[in-house]
Length: 486
Image (cartoon, rainbow, N blue to C red; front, side, top):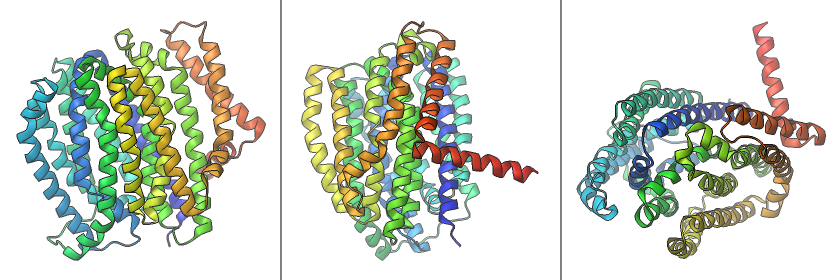
């Protein structure tokens, strides 16, 4: 019998462990690489990554989300999507290969010609493991995924550092990405019992595409929008500026990508199991929202306050320009988790048409703001990112909330206590940081621990519900482990 509560807690735990371990390795590797390669090299990778992310959206085609939404999937559906993914990946790779010269000319960077051709191979490599990851996610089995992503990040990270030390520059970043994809795809095949069959069911394709096509278009619009900043910064500012921007994103992604990964991987399959039980569905969403925002406010709030110390201590003064970028990107990232959670609600309710309409409206308005940013500088563009993130969150939460009877104002009210906790801790840490030396490792450790202790004290004093839930959950895990050992 499917024990949903146990599966959910286990899924959340292993998704967090896997995502956090992966991000820690990636973060540490990124710090080392930032000292071995230049902002210019990272800028080149930033230009290339735009194309790959958008192309990967086409490869997925919205089918993965469609499969996750369905309670029961057939062999015909899995094999059909598998064949479609690989065929699409090969087609896109050929298209990119012959367009590489045009891409290099657009950015006026000749090196991009070969870089694009090589790194685009990831499209084909990744397409071989989409179904395996989908099946693991549907089963809320994130333990295997956690191990695979960690191993891939560790091995490819060490490989990238060695190449960078040997003077490979930007190619150390490219080969690292290729190796990570190869390891992940290989391990997913090794641990999965599913194998494709030479089946392509037109009826299954039409059914999945009916829902997935709307998600594809909305995801494509979303990805183009969020990655267009790489294009604009690289084209209209400088490659170095784009390098600083990508390093700021590296720091921001340590807490942010962990949280969004957990939300994407766990909330959709878990909530999909409850879609026919409105009360349980709503309560489960509330719990996930509160827990997510508690972690979001504390982690990103800490990143905002400690941004200067983090940059100087970990990657050095040559990256100082990234400090302001990091603070603003973290503010924008505060709105990602609730936005993504509510988008998952809309998906589960089968309203892909609403998602598409939302994306068209939001991104059409954003085009004007991006144009303004081009003429007024990088910081104006970053403020625009914050505004658009907030707009995304409000619209998605309003629509998703109405579909499940959990209105926007109620969602905001429920996360205010966690925001207050993070705000008090952040203000105290900021005040303490003023008299200290920004370049001190001890200062970084002291301020981080101070923020953590303050947040715990606030939780204990006010008995904040989300804090108490996390505390009791951790204590129950510790007690269970103790009893098991005895």
